[in-house]
Image (spheres, rainbow, N blue to C red):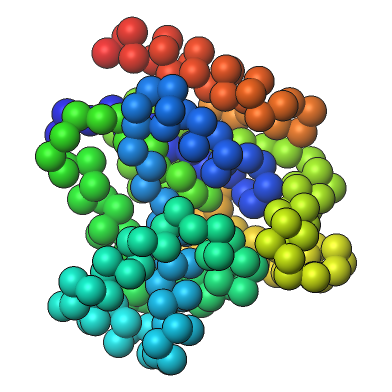
Length: 217
């Protein structure tokens, strides 16, 4: 394996997705997000009226067209809808599906290529103990909830702020208790509080840390 691996973790609304998109342009990196993958799978299941999570994994493994549809949705704003986030949590609660997803992640650094890889999620630093750089983004709960509700408003979902908060709290309680990849920072993660920082300021800080880390390699 010759790729530089950065784990970019944090709870919803801390700025992971925006930061990863900025970093892709700054350091010519690839982003891998298990959350986005599972949200896209939840979308695919709804689109094709598939109820059994195990069945959809089998279909993905055998059907290149199914995978191409899911892959094509990874950057879509459609899967940012909270219902697909809840669908992703349900998928991850199925042991066979979560095992498949984790194995998929662990194989990514060994793919051909030399671009840095950013693993975006809520606890990926625990999956990659060898990763030279692990970032955990924090933010005050009120700020996180407001950011996520703002995203929902942009999507035109019409969801109430109280419903956004309730959904996030329930989902995050489940994620923190996940026995395989709990939504918690790894012990060696660098923690950055984004509460009062602009998106550009967060990016600049992470870039400095990235540059300092790569100089040591």
